[in-house]
Length: 320
Image (cartoon, rainbow, N blue to C red; front, side, top):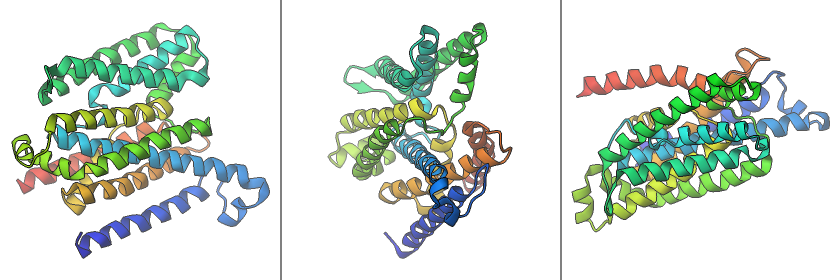
């Protein structure tokens, strides 16, 4: 790692610390750190810290999954929801509400829906012991569209207010309702990110080309299966607790490649820091911009992410 890249990573870390401190003190009620440490304000401090942790996990998990999928699929437009994970989780949650399953088990049902959808997409794309990249992308898009259509149909046909409220969940929500569930998701996401980082050198080789990776002694099919499983687990766990949050897994990896380069041993840590900053800022905007109303965070990430992605795309086209 060169001195320039070290400085950039350190700069991102400093920005993250500043963003966390800002997010702690900003909300529907603005309080200083000293005021938050008072006994009567401790519950507010704990709630904000939980949201900051949730935002950091969601951002890091989705963005690092995006990095891995873009390398494995060798497609710069690949992102964590490309395997239909989000649609599967959404359909599972809505069916759970229709059946009358307790809201406490909603994340579990959403997680199962996401995993089952990923297995279906993978089965459709597999050809013997191999998984075709184009077939996987196409299968994911088809399944995602089909499940999204079913979700819209169920929501439109229902008079259940709780079901219509699911549209909020489908656009993302970082409110922490169960701290134990947050810790379970944190364990899955952190373990997944560590596993992807361990495979960073394999990602470097595969992103160049599968033939080159095979010549380097890498079992590309096994590596791809492992990474598909890890990214599916990360995405499913995050979608099950905070809903669908778009553009994070697409835009942040692109920005970090421009900043630190394509080496995944550097790109993955940089992406973790940058995506945490991005998500914490977006969550702060969602809570404060129309306070006391809260905007679904997926709306904020889309409004910020879409223009940024267009700018980066145009810049990349000019470079070519």
